[in-house]
Image (cartoon, rainbow, N blue to C red; front, side, top):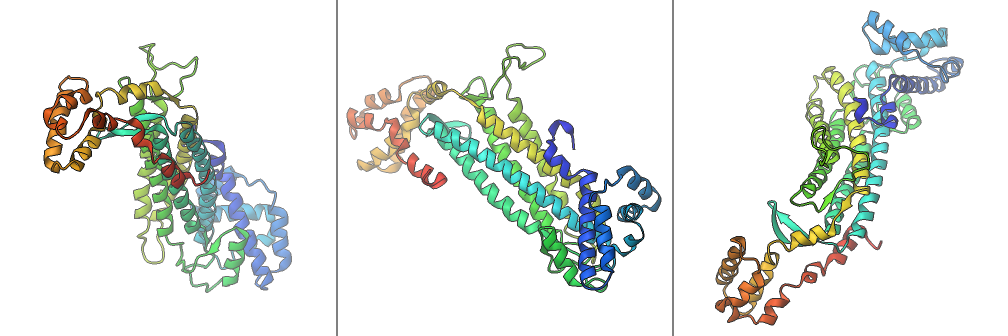
Length: 435
């Protein structure tokens, strides 16, 4: 985790202090269940809670113990025993390290998902507000980077809203997928620990029981989680790239907010660069980079190995912290995005009406002209515009083959911009409902 791209609420989830607190809660809840089952004395379970509930676990002390024993969970339990006293011997009875580690990881991933879901909600609100603001702001649609047909800037933002609404649903599903608990013992057979202990801990920690866990919770769950983060990152990049293109000097239809004292270049005082959206592109690459290791973690040896452990110590914090920062940055970018409707109209008019070529093509076919012939008639006039002649409508009116089928009035009717926006309300209703 790099502080430059981190926010406190998310980084706190992955702090050693939070981790050890979760470990203690898992162990203490398990002790409660074992006490109810008569496996350990009830007074021991009470003592564990009483002395450990508000204890500040000493990270440096745990690290020092681990340096000797070379085992993180044993180091933690040793330190807890220093706090709890003799009754600590009843902790971890019948459990294995993965019961604590995997359940803790899933608690952290669930908490991280809750923050990310809130991040997406904030982004959706910003996208919705700006989409309605520019619902009928005309702009040119582009395919292959080339002018295609008219659209509205609101539709561009509505498309992004729909994409992130899907992202939210996927993330919620991934959260549910990873929200499981395993307290099943050395190879997952419950030989030394009653399944009712697992059920109690799962309920106490807000998780579901893992149906079959070998010694670890199956990593296909985690693979789905990180793959979902990767897809969300790609959606961030798609929107960031759109903004980067729109901010190019030759386009300048929208740009990132540029504050009064902001500086764009150490060398060129005139510069206003799309630094936020470029940064988002880079952050998206990093989040996606964690997907492949998560997929490779699925294939562990037999009931367990630890090849996944080092991976998850990195990708758990890094992927969630980075995506949290990226979503918040994108929300701020959209919220303060500067939009230039006049430049949008200027670019829309730049090719002298070529954006209406399909309507003319269809009009000719409706007059009985074979499609191939109609295409040839429209294209030969369109190519003249590409060659430097500016007025597509005037060229069509001057073409005798076109005039033989379409009157001036009929041609002009096909250059009506509003025609392209007649279903904008329909699309908005599909995306936003009755808002």
